[in-house]
Length: 454
Image (cartoon, rainbow, N blue to C red; front, side, top):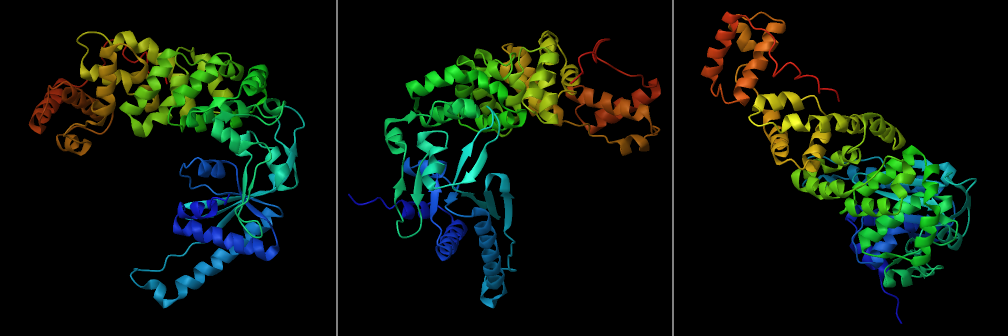
């Protein structure tokens, strides 16, 4: 049976700069006599007919040295091309770039980056783990050894890219059979103990591809779920970022919850029906900001100390931590936000101190329709509104610089939000009235600022 032309299929799916980079890489590897392979996820996706712009390349040899040689070759080629007069035809100016090489010598890896694209190179390697959850110790090895140290059989595949065996697929663990059977299967008994992030990764793959977790793999996962406690916050944060980037993160988190994985990460971490319903709702309400709002949604129903401790465990960034810590105060605010006849300016004042991702999460999570409508009004309209008059306009009317000017601007905004001053003339009339009366601080009730903590 003839081999499928996977190399041709790979090249067809790449943009022209990436094809050129790949061709240059293969040429340089041939010159050094180094076997080159497409490995892991990009090959898996190629076999599944799923488009991918990633290039993960394994080298039986020194990947870091080859990466530097590739960058130097690309740089010379780019400078020579931009210096030719014909390179300027149809262009205002020559475009030059300097390839950048990022290396991780501990793991024998390098990345070569050009504008809008990069290729990851690794030295084919074997690895050992000093203890559960530790990063591996790696040593150069054959491509077969490299594939056998990987997470799942569907990722333990390699496609030879250069002669003499170009087009050959290396498959020591039956990964192609698992792709056909739609299974996620680990390669050895201690896989989840060595690296428990494989638990979330396996659930991610099962959700993304509509695969099943192979029964023995599922038994091992349940047995070893406690090893998630050995994983650092930084690595957990990376896993959650990847979960949030999936098409249906709520499916993944719900499955991890049911398997006990979330509780193993942090005892307060849960993912119940409110969050499962809120995640797709966030995608509808605020597609561009949904991922930022997933973080505070994780803190739903937690106390502030629990939310802060969860944020610490997940190595949340400062904005993520603030948004997560805001959720308990927002839940306490819900009855006030749902009061009948609450003025628009009043709920704007209540909500303005809180981080926007927390407000979007709250809008998706609350079951009170009045509270949700007011949140969405604030998020999409009220927070963007400003008075017609500016500080300079008020100075021209005789208001001195200082607290009084700020207070009048605030009162003008409230009047605009409440429909009491809709035109510039209305605002000028109100401003003169406030100047004559002598402005005093104005709040919506004596406890209006008591829920401002974020």
